[in-house]
Every structure is written in structure tokens, then in C-alpha cells.
Image (cartoon, rainbow, N blue to C red; front, top):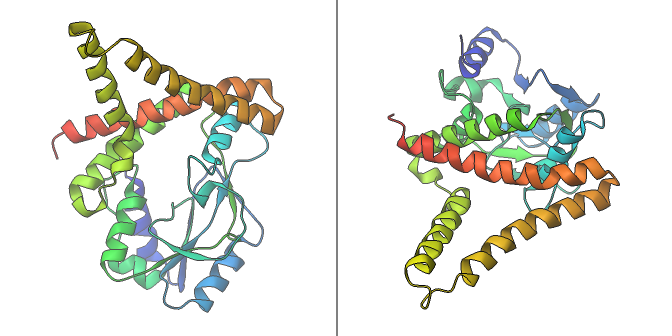
Amino acid sequence: PVAAGEKRNRGVAAAQGEFIAFTDDDTILREDWLRAAVKHLVQNPDYAGVGGPNFTPREGLPFAKAVGRIFGSKFLFRFRYTAGHGEPREVDHNPTCNYVLRREAVASVGFHPTLWPGEDVEFDIRLQQAGHRILYAPDVVVWHHRRSRPLAFLRQMFNYGVTRAQVTRMHPGSFDPRHYAFIGAFVVLASLYGLAWQQPTAVPWLLPAALNAAYFGVLGLAGLLVGAQTRSFKQALYAPLVLFIQHFGYSLGLLVGLLRRP
């Protein structure tokens, strides 16, 4: 099968217009999406591309809606999934579910022909290395369907983690320690449990147990917040699971990606 990056490269090669618009087949475009994106590129000639928020559709199963709520939390994710307001700003990445670029810029950089997913992240790294700038505009809006089943969401987060590790290996300057926070916390917690087992007088069991309880308390708090926002009992129950899968799946993918041979 042909990877998404190679498909985009073929489309760009066949295109003749000034701008190239990228989206996904599970995305709903606001009726003014393309007009708003082109307006920003015309008004900001120093930018190679523009994207905007991708919201979660109102319809969908409770698990998918819970994923959207977690993604939309300003405490957990950046503005990409949150309310579409504020001023346009420069960013380091726009996902290709909502991305309009100048054809010359895309053609000169090109997408990685085999990397997937994460090929849009890798593309933006090289786009900026080539001297281009990326714009985020809150009025360039799409709605993007989320995974509706826990196993599908776990697979997605795992794949994201694998390719993030691969992208970091390809571009060491893109390393972000925040991506490895869950792994670091797990190592610390496991070490504390080991020390408590071997030297209970030096490290009481209460310390790692309290840290463990604090994490699950955060998961529970996420459920309460989602329940208060949505008035949905099912979404409130799913929210802690969504957050845990996001942490666990992504971190497991990172480890596999780091251990996998280039």
C-alpha cells in the first residue's frame, strides 16, 4: 500500500493551483474553511501554510465524545482542540486534517514517502528547517471524528508514540521531554516500590502508594470534570479510561519506537 505522505506528494505534483488544501476523509469542513485559510495566506505572505482547530462532532458514540473532551481540555492539550477564538499565531505544527499551504513550499519540501502516522509532524520540521513559517488561525475550522472504541484509540496512541520516537531519531532537535513524562513517572514509581520492598524503613510503602493514588485521583478528576461539562454519565465514566489509554498507549509506542531499528 502507498503511504499517506507519498499520496500527498503525487497530488502536489499533479496540482496546478497556488494553494494546496489537505484534510482527512473523516473530517467535516466548515463552509468557509477554504476561504478563511486562503484569506490568511494572502494577508500573511511570510507564512507557508495555515491551519486551525479541529473540533469533535456533536454526533458520535460516548467514548468518541469523551476523547474529544479530553483533547479539548486546556489543561492537557494546546489550543488545537479548544475553542476557536483569539488571534492568529505562529506555531510549529498543523495536522494535515486541517492544513492549507502554498504549493511551492510543499513541493520544495515534500512529505516522507513511507512514514505513517506522524508524517505531517516530520514534514513541518523540515518545512521550518527550510526557512518557512506556519500559522494557526482560530477561524479555519474543521470537525474531526475521534476513535469510538477503546482498542482503536489505544492502537492510534501507540502508533503516534512509535512514529514520534522515529521522528525524534530523524530530527534530534525535535526532542520534547514532555512526551516522556509518563515513562519517567513510571520508572520513578517502580523504583520506589522496589526500594520499599527491599528497605521498608528507608522508603515506606506509603510514599509510592500515595503517588499511585494521586495519579488515579487525577484520572478520576478528569471524569468528574467531563461529567460536569457534558451532563453525561457515560462520558464521565469513559474520560479516565481515555486519559489512561492516551498516557499508556503513547508511552508504550515511544518505547517500541526507540527500540526499533531505523
